[in-house]
Length: 233
Length: 343
Image 1 (spheres, helix red, strand yellow):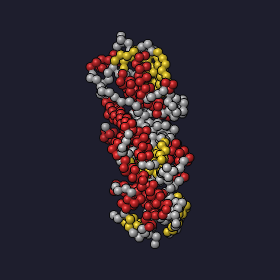
Image 2 (image 1 turned 30 degrees about the vertical axis):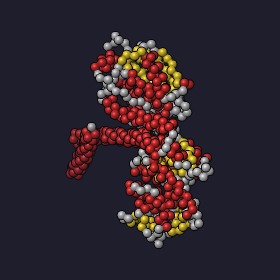
Image 3 (image 1 turned 135 degrees about the horizontal axis):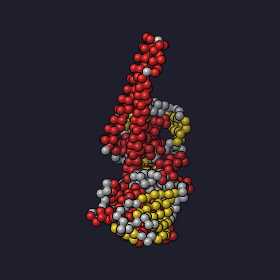
Image 4 (image 1 turned 60 degrees about the vertical axis):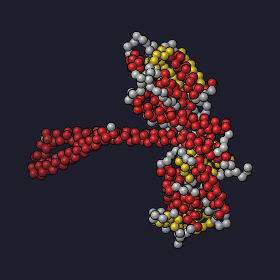
């Protein structure tokens, strides 16, 4: 009972929230349900959670702002956005703020549950995989995968959990081309080709952090029609 | 309509450009000819030059053209500005409608998939069915509101106007709205007396009550409270709906009944709505020959929506009798919708 993953569900649509809470509880998660941004931030600060399911159009403090404030305090907290907004600019905005995944309403129950399970599993795997040697260096950059901090030529910054996972995945395969599909399947466990924008948005952010000139990347290179290649040479 | 407006802008722009170039040409011509004359004839001609008729005409003409350019540019700017505002409102409306359509749809899909994927107890099944019906009602209301807005604007909606006793219709509709929004007894109060009659389409008036109640509920931070006060004079039946919600900022008061307009308040306890609800209210009351207004003392001090309807008097040959006449001639309009957002 005590080992159950705890999920903060932020959804103001009562009927949807009831269905989500029921299904998440059936999967064995402990769920705290709130209906607005203020309560979401209060709950986040007073309780401990393993994942946050977040709607965007919520009262008082909107979902983007909630995600931004949570990111400031907890870069590792997995955040999955559920939103009716399907425009590319909304998705990109969410990913830029640091949400880890974005699911558009209406969604399939199985897909949602898979993504939640995947995010929690990867969080666990990530923690165990970086436990022994958490610090990596390339160029003028130092990455601490343990506490998700990084030092680059541009100063000290904090990575989100998914940013760190993407970077680590590429670094573990240095010198090899990694396709967008591979990243999607292994980091996000998504099998849809339409979601490749998600990967691109993360790569853009990583380049902004660590490349001396993000327009002409030397560490994370794009390989046309193939994917991305990490090299620290 | 849009094509016509675009042509108008282009025309204004072309006229402004012609005016500007003409002015420039005129001034260049004047400078060159004056320079030649002065150089040739010297100071003798200077006096003629400054007092000459042609110069006065050129100066006046220049000023007129300048004014024309300014007016043209101002018109162009004002039109473009209003067009931009309409486009922004339209974008917001689309975003809101998308949210309002997709949210109940997501909920229905989730409930159906849950029923399919899981073994659920009978009471829980009933609960999911109830939630789904709640969502289908919401979708139905929204779709009706959007589809019928054009009809209302083009006066294609056939209202069934009838003469009602003001007391009875107001009290019944207010109680029905309070029941619909599940307001506890202490949160709802109706006061007043109106020994007069009014001409109204009861279903349309129900929409008005429901939309105003819906707003009060959505925009109350705590438990909503609504007080309905009404009275009539010899000409006008006045109904005030006073809530204790978050109030309306003064700059929003004049726009609140406009189509697609929504109050953007970070402290608003609800983000639901399309910006059509109060527009509906205004249009329906306008069709009844009445008027709507709103007052608020500011933030967190509640707001009062006022509906004024003309009092019916059989002897009076006025708009009300014409409405009754039209209602007798037109077929019945099917049931409408209720509940929308502030603005």
